[in-house]
Image (tube, rainbow, N blue to C red; front, side, top):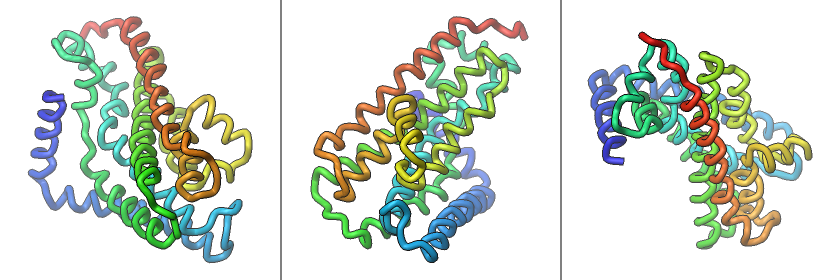
Length: 258
Protein backbone atom coordinates (compact mmCIF):
# COMPACT_ATOMS: atom_id res chain seq x y z
CA UNK A 1 0.00 0.00 0.00
CA UNK A 2 2.97 2.31 0.47
CA UNK A 3 3.54 2.20 -3.30
CA UNK A 4 -0.12 2.98 -4.02
CA UNK A 5 -0.04 6.01 -1.74
CA UNK A 6 3.07 7.13 -3.59
CA UNK A 7 1.09 6.93 -6.85
CA UNK A 8 -1.73 8.78 -5.10
CA UNK A 9 0.61 11.59 -4.07
CA UNK A 10 2.08 11.89 -7.57
CA UNK A 11 -1.34 12.14 -9.25
CA UNK A 12 -2.55 14.65 -6.66
CA UNK A 13 0.47 16.89 -7.24
CA UNK A 14 -0.08 16.58 -10.97
CA UNK A 15 -3.71 17.75 -10.95
CA UNK A 16 -2.89 20.56 -8.53
CA UNK A 17 -0.51 22.04 -11.10
CA UNK A 18 -3.60 23.20 -13.00
CA UNK A 19 -6.02 24.10 -10.22
CA UNK A 20 -8.49 26.04 -12.35
CA UNK A 21 -8.78 23.20 -14.86
CA UNK A 22 -9.23 20.73 -12.01
CA UNK A 23 -11.96 22.80 -10.35
CA UNK A 24 -13.80 23.31 -13.63
CA UNK A 25 -13.73 19.57 -14.30
CA UNK A 26 -15.00 18.86 -10.78
CA UNK A 27 -17.79 21.39 -11.34
CA UNK A 28 -18.75 19.77 -14.66
CA UNK A 29 -18.89 16.36 -12.98
CA UNK A 30 -21.12 17.87 -10.31
CA UNK A 31 -23.47 19.31 -12.93
CA UNK A 32 -23.71 15.96 -14.71
CA UNK A 33 -24.86 14.38 -11.48
CA UNK A 34 -27.35 17.18 -10.86
CA UNK A 35 -29.16 16.11 -14.04
CA UNK A 36 -29.61 12.63 -12.55
CA UNK A 37 -31.05 14.19 -9.42
CA UNK A 38 -33.42 16.36 -11.45
CA UNK A 39 -34.65 13.27 -13.32
CA UNK A 40 -35.65 11.68 -10.00
CA UNK A 41 -37.08 14.94 -8.66
CA UNK A 42 -39.33 15.64 -11.66
CA UNK A 43 -40.55 12.06 -11.82
CA UNK A 44 -41.65 12.14 -8.19
CA UNK A 45 -43.23 15.54 -8.75
CA UNK A 46 -45.78 13.63 -10.85
CA UNK A 47 -45.74 10.17 -9.21
CA UNK A 48 -45.58 10.11 -5.41
CA UNK A 49 -44.25 6.55 -5.17
CA UNK A 50 -42.53 4.03 -7.43
CA UNK A 51 -43.27 0.39 -6.53
CA UNK A 52 -43.92 1.50 -2.95
CA UNK A 53 -40.75 3.59 -2.59
CA UNK A 54 -41.01 7.27 -1.74
CA UNK A 55 -38.94 10.16 -3.05
CA UNK A 56 -36.65 10.26 -0.01
CA UNK A 57 -36.12 6.51 -0.07
CA UNK A 58 -35.10 6.52 -3.74
CA UNK A 59 -32.88 9.55 -3.14
CA UNK A 60 -31.20 7.71 -0.28
CA UNK A 61 -30.61 4.67 -2.51
CA UNK A 62 -29.24 6.84 -5.30
CA UNK A 63 -26.86 8.66 -2.95
CA UNK A 64 -25.38 5.43 -1.57
CA UNK A 65 -24.88 3.90 -5.03
CA UNK A 66 -23.40 7.14 -6.36
CA UNK A 67 -20.85 7.23 -3.53
CA UNK A 68 -19.86 3.62 -4.19
CA UNK A 69 -19.52 4.15 -7.93
CA UNK A 70 -17.47 7.35 -7.57
CA UNK A 71 -15.08 5.73 -5.09
CA UNK A 72 -14.59 2.82 -7.50
CA UNK A 73 -14.02 5.23 -10.40
CA UNK A 74 -11.45 7.14 -8.41
CA UNK A 75 -9.57 3.98 -7.42
CA UNK A 76 -9.96 1.62 -10.37
CA UNK A 77 -10.21 3.76 -13.51
CA UNK A 78 -6.70 2.61 -14.44
CA UNK A 79 -8.37 -0.54 -15.77
CA UNK A 80 -10.46 1.59 -18.13
CA UNK A 81 -7.41 2.43 -20.25
CA UNK A 82 -5.87 -1.02 -19.98
CA UNK A 83 -6.48 -1.85 -23.65
CA UNK A 84 -4.09 0.92 -24.71
CA UNK A 85 -1.49 -0.32 -22.21
CA UNK A 86 -1.47 -3.70 -23.94
CA UNK A 87 -1.43 -2.17 -27.40
CA UNK A 88 1.56 0.12 -26.82
CA UNK A 89 3.58 -2.44 -24.87
CA UNK A 90 3.32 -0.64 -21.53
CA UNK A 91 2.08 -3.80 -19.84
CA UNK A 92 5.37 -5.52 -20.77
CA UNK A 93 7.16 -2.93 -18.68
CA UNK A 94 4.79 -3.50 -15.80
CA UNK A 95 5.42 -7.26 -15.81
CA UNK A 96 9.19 -6.92 -15.47
CA UNK A 97 8.89 -4.71 -12.38
CA UNK A 98 9.10 -6.42 -8.98
CA UNK A 99 5.66 -5.22 -7.90
CA UNK A 100 2.12 -6.53 -8.24
CA UNK A 101 0.77 -5.76 -11.72
CA UNK A 102 -2.73 -4.88 -10.45
CA UNK A 103 -1.30 -2.28 -8.08
CA UNK A 104 0.72 -0.76 -10.90
CA UNK A 105 -2.29 -0.60 -13.23
CA UNK A 106 -4.34 1.04 -10.48
CA UNK A 107 -1.59 3.61 -10.03
CA UNK A 108 -1.63 4.67 -13.68
CA UNK A 109 -4.87 6.61 -13.27
CA UNK A 110 -6.53 8.05 -10.17
CA UNK A 111 -9.59 10.18 -10.92
CA UNK A 112 -9.68 13.02 -8.38
CA UNK A 113 -12.23 14.85 -10.52
CA UNK A 114 -14.88 12.38 -9.34
CA UNK A 115 -14.97 14.44 -6.16
CA UNK A 116 -17.71 16.49 -7.83
CA UNK A 117 -20.00 13.49 -8.16
CA UNK A 118 -19.15 12.36 -4.65
CA UNK A 119 -20.18 15.72 -3.22
CA UNK A 120 -23.56 15.43 -4.91
CA UNK A 121 -23.92 11.89 -3.62
CA UNK A 122 -23.19 13.04 -0.07
CA UNK A 123 -25.74 15.86 -0.34
CA UNK A 124 -28.43 13.50 -1.64
CA UNK A 125 -27.65 10.91 1.00
CA UNK A 126 -27.61 13.37 3.94
CA UNK A 127 -30.83 15.07 2.80
CA UNK A 128 -32.68 11.78 2.37
CA UNK A 129 -31.31 10.33 5.62
CA UNK A 130 -32.65 13.32 7.56
CA UNK A 131 -36.01 13.53 5.78
CA UNK A 132 -36.72 9.85 5.23
CA UNK A 133 -37.73 8.97 8.78
CA UNK A 134 -35.17 6.16 9.03
CA UNK A 135 -34.91 4.82 12.62
CA UNK A 136 -31.13 5.08 12.82
CA UNK A 137 -29.27 2.83 15.21
CA UNK A 138 -25.83 1.20 15.34
CA UNK A 139 -26.74 -1.83 13.15
CA UNK A 140 -28.17 0.44 10.46
CA UNK A 141 -25.11 2.69 10.47
CA UNK A 142 -22.87 -0.39 10.13
CA UNK A 143 -25.09 -1.66 7.30
CA UNK A 144 -24.73 1.67 5.51
CA UNK A 145 -20.94 1.57 5.75
CA UNK A 146 -20.91 -2.02 4.48
CA UNK A 147 -23.19 -1.02 1.58
CA UNK A 148 -20.74 1.67 0.45
CA UNK A 149 -17.71 -0.58 0.92
CA UNK A 150 -19.38 -3.54 -0.79
CA UNK A 151 -20.66 -1.42 -3.66
CA UNK A 152 -17.20 0.02 -4.24
CA UNK A 153 -15.78 -3.51 -4.32
CA UNK A 154 -18.41 -4.72 -6.80
CA UNK A 155 -17.68 -1.88 -9.21
CA UNK A 156 -13.92 -2.38 -8.84
CA UNK A 157 -14.44 -6.06 -9.65
CA UNK A 158 -16.37 -5.12 -12.79
CA UNK A 159 -13.58 -2.77 -13.90
CA UNK A 160 -11.08 -5.59 -13.29
CA UNK A 161 -13.26 -7.95 -15.33
CA UNK A 162 -13.37 -5.40 -18.14
CA UNK A 163 -9.58 -5.21 -18.19
CA UNK A 164 -9.32 -9.00 -18.14
CA UNK A 165 -11.23 -9.23 -21.41
CA UNK A 166 -8.56 -7.06 -23.05
CA UNK A 167 -6.12 -9.97 -22.87
CA UNK A 168 -8.34 -11.88 -25.29
CA UNK A 169 -9.76 -9.10 -27.48
CA UNK A 170 -6.99 -6.43 -27.39
CA UNK A 171 -9.77 -3.88 -27.09
CA UNK A 172 -12.24 -3.14 -24.34
CA UNK A 173 -15.68 -4.64 -24.85
CA UNK A 174 -18.35 -1.96 -24.87
CA UNK A 175 -20.99 -4.35 -23.56
CA UNK A 176 -19.20 -4.19 -20.19
CA UNK A 177 -20.50 -0.64 -19.85
CA UNK A 178 -23.88 -2.24 -19.20
CA UNK A 179 -22.45 -3.64 -15.97
CA UNK A 180 -20.37 -0.60 -14.94
CA UNK A 181 -22.02 2.68 -15.92
CA UNK A 182 -25.28 0.85 -16.59
CA UNK A 183 -25.28 -0.76 -13.16
CA UNK A 184 -24.82 2.66 -11.59
CA UNK A 185 -27.63 4.17 -13.66
CA UNK A 186 -30.05 1.36 -12.83
CA UNK A 187 -28.87 1.32 -9.22
CA UNK A 188 -30.36 4.77 -8.64
CA UNK A 189 -33.65 2.95 -7.96
CA UNK A 190 -34.20 -0.14 -5.78
CA UNK A 191 -33.68 -3.12 -8.07
CA UNK A 192 -37.12 -4.58 -7.41
CA UNK A 193 -38.70 -1.86 -9.59
CA UNK A 194 -37.16 -3.55 -12.67
CA UNK A 195 -38.88 -6.86 -12.05
CA UNK A 196 -38.12 -10.28 -10.60
CA UNK A 197 -35.68 -11.41 -13.33
CA UNK A 198 -33.41 -8.40 -12.96
CA UNK A 199 -33.38 -8.81 -9.20
CA UNK A 200 -32.46 -12.50 -9.55
CA UNK A 201 -29.67 -11.69 -12.03
CA UNK A 202 -28.27 -9.08 -9.64
CA UNK A 203 -28.43 -11.56 -6.80
CA UNK A 204 -26.93 -14.74 -8.26
CA UNK A 205 -24.80 -13.56 -11.22
CA UNK A 206 -23.50 -10.12 -10.32
CA UNK A 207 -24.38 -9.75 -6.62
CA UNK A 208 -25.20 -6.06 -6.79
CA UNK A 209 -28.51 -6.50 -4.98
CA UNK A 210 -26.57 -7.76 -1.94
CA UNK A 211 -25.08 -4.28 -1.54
CA UNK A 212 -28.08 -2.32 -2.78
CA UNK A 213 -31.56 -3.84 -2.49
CA UNK A 214 -31.58 -6.20 0.50
CA UNK A 215 -29.52 -4.01 2.88
CA UNK A 216 -31.57 -1.01 1.73
CA UNK A 217 -34.80 -2.78 2.70
CA UNK A 218 -33.33 -3.47 6.13
CA UNK A 219 -32.18 0.12 6.66
CA UNK A 220 -35.55 1.50 5.55
CA UNK A 221 -37.38 -0.96 7.81
CA UNK A 222 -39.23 -2.56 4.88
CA UNK A 223 -38.11 -6.13 5.49
CA UNK A 224 -35.12 -8.40 5.97
CA UNK A 225 -33.46 -9.53 9.16
CA UNK A 226 -30.15 -8.69 10.77
CA UNK A 227 -28.44 -11.02 8.29
CA UNK A 228 -28.82 -8.20 5.74
CA UNK A 229 -26.09 -6.32 7.61
CA UNK A 230 -23.49 -8.80 6.39
CA UNK A 231 -24.76 -9.35 2.83
CA UNK A 232 -22.48 -6.60 1.43
CA UNK A 233 -19.48 -8.44 2.88
CA UNK A 234 -20.67 -11.62 1.17
CA UNK A 235 -20.99 -9.71 -2.11
CA UNK A 236 -17.34 -8.68 -1.86
CA UNK A 237 -16.44 -12.29 -2.68
CA UNK A 238 -17.37 -11.34 -6.26
CA UNK A 239 -13.87 -9.91 -6.47
CA UNK A 240 -12.40 -13.43 -6.32
CA UNK A 241 -13.72 -14.73 -9.69
CA UNK A 242 -12.82 -11.37 -11.25
CA UNK A 243 -9.25 -11.76 -9.96
CA UNK A 244 -9.09 -15.37 -11.20
CA UNK A 245 -10.22 -14.25 -14.67
CA UNK A 246 -7.52 -11.56 -14.61
CA UNK A 247 -4.84 -14.11 -13.64
CA UNK A 248 -5.94 -16.38 -16.51
CA UNK A 249 -5.52 -13.45 -18.86
CA UNK A 250 -2.06 -12.63 -17.50
CA UNK A 251 -0.95 -16.25 -18.05
CA UNK A 252 -2.28 -16.17 -21.61
CA UNK A 253 -0.70 -12.81 -22.36
CA UNK A 254 1.85 -12.65 -25.17
CA UNK A 255 4.24 -9.71 -25.42
CA UNK A 256 3.77 -7.22 -28.23
CA UNK A 257 7.54 -7.32 -28.82
CA UNK A 258 7.72 -3.51 -28.92
